Image 1 (cartoon, rainbow, N blue to C red):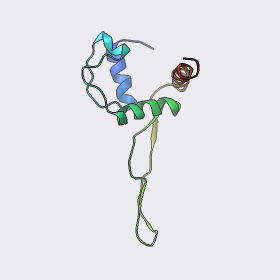
Image 2: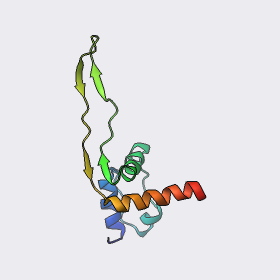
Image 3: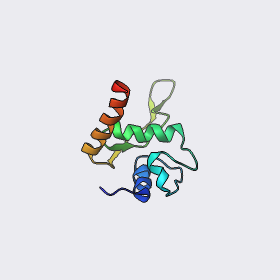
Length: 101
């Protein structure tokens, strides 16, 4: 896997970061000109927790009428955007920070 600002930006986009990111070297340590939304960060971390599968976030799971008939229901579809092993290793690193400090 190649590193560098451009690859970080491409990977972030695959993981759900839609905010435009600048290709500066400081991006590797979180140096962003414009921050990303909490929803985008949750989406990106969710991709790691989901074994590298990105699922676009949605707010409404289903709509039912007064009789309980489902009018419309969300059908989330995931796409493998990061290798499962890489997602596991990244999740393990994040978990280690919380568990061991």
